[in-house]
Length: 354
Image (cartoon, rainbow, N blue to C red; front, side, top):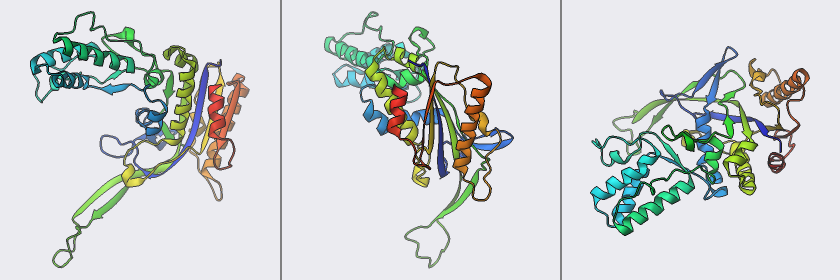
């Protein structure tokens, strides 16, 4: 099996604010001495992982990322008739196996049941936690040290297998990500624009006050984004316990997600959902490399030139030049191009799975 699959995607988004910074403006990056709009890898991975498409394709094989597992355990114990004090103590013991707990001198209700950092629980671990809580409730006693050995090496969690997890206090149960995702950037210079808007009170008939009931300003941007993804298929199979059937399902669901699912930021205001317009997949054991250098010089269409055609040409010229200089950087390639009606997602999925 060829170890690496590299994906290069071009997706065009209309005016949108898919991924905001701390001021509410679209995230940006300076590249090639030009400002680009940017969508962070974290934003994209969360959108894919929590999408209905992904969850339906991999039901039962998705982890749970939360600080609040202790609250869930406490609720299960109290619902089973365990007194609050005992339920709280046992819940802290169980949740504490997955990360440092907040101080028991809580400021808010149940804050002492929270883990300080987000922890990613595999389906196996959630099952073990639920089983232990049920056992404690039935016997009316605290968990033993042996029963508290709840951490597992995840083998069923597709999202942990792909994107990894880190447990600072229990590194033996860490998992290295099999899928690396770059920040998506526009292939051209992209300014952030501001939208001034107002809202009118429906009950204001304008007899005494003709002004707006609310005025505001929001930022947005539009552009054609390049996204690079590297999949280590060998590591993915290892992370999934060499379950070949599950690995194939994961790759299929992932290809559907990365080509169809958009980050959710301000979608109600912009409806900026989009499918990928162009995807290039490469397979091989060679050292992976991004093709982002194709856009160090921002794409600038002139006259009747098309932005997408120029970006596709830049990608193809870049990988051809890499091959000339370094030798073949991939054993095989396959692409789809919506503008030309060439290729298909089904063919691309089969290529990546093979």
